[in-house]
Length: 139
Image (cartoon, rainbow, N blue to C red):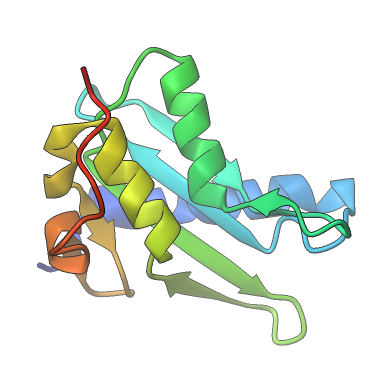
């Protein structure tokens, strides 16, 4: 599927959260930002967090945590952007396996979540995760 104007705006939201988090200056934090939009039209953002002890989380986890904290669980579209500090360039990234599984587990309808994977393409989560581990945790 090709990208829409709304998709391109969502990419910009992911970039904004990276810029917003940079002044925090934590080790390996804020290099990747994620933004998602729900069917209700609400946008949630999250930034990656890495710590010396090896704990951390993806930007997707933090955006989804914000979404759940606001009473929603279904994701219409999601994107993750990585910022290469040395080259001063942004790159759209596909979701890692852990994030793909989490999105599937929080809502059965999320198998149809549109995942932006490049500047010009998006796919449904079920294409990236054809054989999910386990079942949705949804009651």
